[in-house]
Length: 499
Image 1 (cartoon, rainbow, N blue to C red):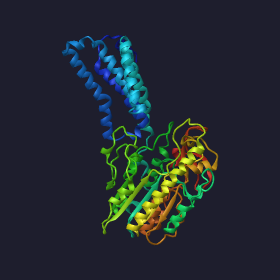
Image 2: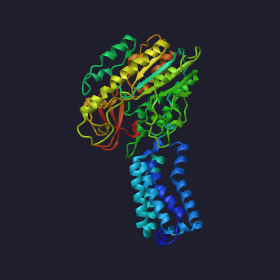
Image 3: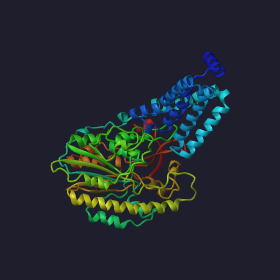
Image 4: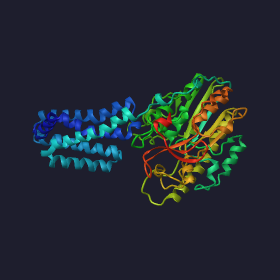
């Protein structure tokens, strides 16, 4: 330890220019910080290569070019002593803005200008700055490594099925449409509590078109990623039971993009699979696509995209796939970000009523969109199986979705998080067990039992419980909020209880 300390002191007191170390130091902390806060968005090998090049290889190349020019061009020799510290701090400042604010030109220009000034002023202390940058990188590397090696539970570990459902053989093979309006609350909640909204027109439309409605249906999880990954895995993941920080479910996008038993089962039963999304949010980490068709190509968004730069007309995309082949079987997962939910922003003040009004404005748009796409399917594929299943509730009654992470005791607020729409138009006969569907985690087990005429797959249902990570007004952890009797609870989940 003393030897390491002596080497650090010697480096700090050295007058030798070390451009390679300076280049690495400029990008290492921003790179590790970016990954520590966004690992679920950046975990593909393709992204890792890109970001290592962008954050580390590019400054190394620039420093090398700078050294070459200084040694060959006499004009640049006069600024040699300033070149390394100035470029280090300019690049460091630029990357800090990039990883916190995104491509915000105004902030980037200010940061680069500040980096230039500091590089000139602090030239004599530059080695101390490099040491500080490396120390910052080490401090963020420790929790990142802990998360990667100790906290992450990959799909391989939680997605395994308790029976042989992956060998199920369908007796009926209608085309299947899973339509997901984001944040669409159930009819059983929408006319009371904080919603108190008359949605009878759309309810009547569904009933007139032979949809079965599922009162009290609710999501198992609070977000699109956590809910859909559980939906397609047909298993609970408990958010990977985070230890000290709320994070997205690791590899949730990989599961949703097709690395799941549902898509495997459909392909085994000779289905062509289609993924249609309004936004690229579910593809941000560029997961390996398992669907036969997706309406969004990875070339349409950048590596820095947060998933909302690409917008598609899924109704138009669906129509482009028709007419369907007469002898083919097709599965469609169609996601539309309507009506969505209230704001994710914080510190906006008393905006609950304002956010409620916004939600219902978008709900009206969702109803128009749903009617249009359902009419199209019924007109062009009348014998299909159509499932409308929302991913979670609208959080109406809260000022921001952030409030969902503090312990709540108000029953209506809790149900505002989880209450979700489910309506099914069966392709032929209606199964006698259809009213037993209560949460998304078991939805496909019921659908596959219906298609196979085999109820054995209902013997291994997951618990119809709703979970959420809490970090305020209670000890940090994942809590069971609603039990399988639809009662409000507050039971902390551990690895032992989750097994």
